[in-house]
Length: 120
Image (tube, rainbow, N blue to C red; front, side):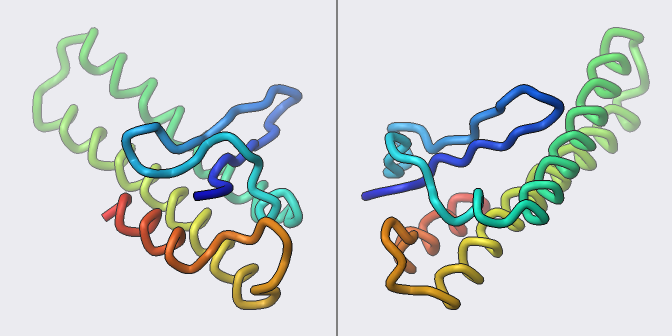
């Protein structure tokens, strides 16, 4: 399989989101689609930054011995934020696949389906 590596640039540093060897996704080559849309990159990076902040709050809550109910609620918020970022990545790839299905290195529909199901 090809292309499932996405590099997001946020604040001068690059963060990589790539499939693991066990998920059947090849992380060796860069996905061309996401880099073509600065707006999509911005939205995804913003969602991930929000999740990062929420996760920091969860860690503080655990270290501060917060009530388990509060910790679970915060964990739920982090999980949803990360899921939404993943769905946005797949949605962007689907839009690009539909608009130019024959583009070199384009993610195939079967790959997109696998990626989508990995988030479910």
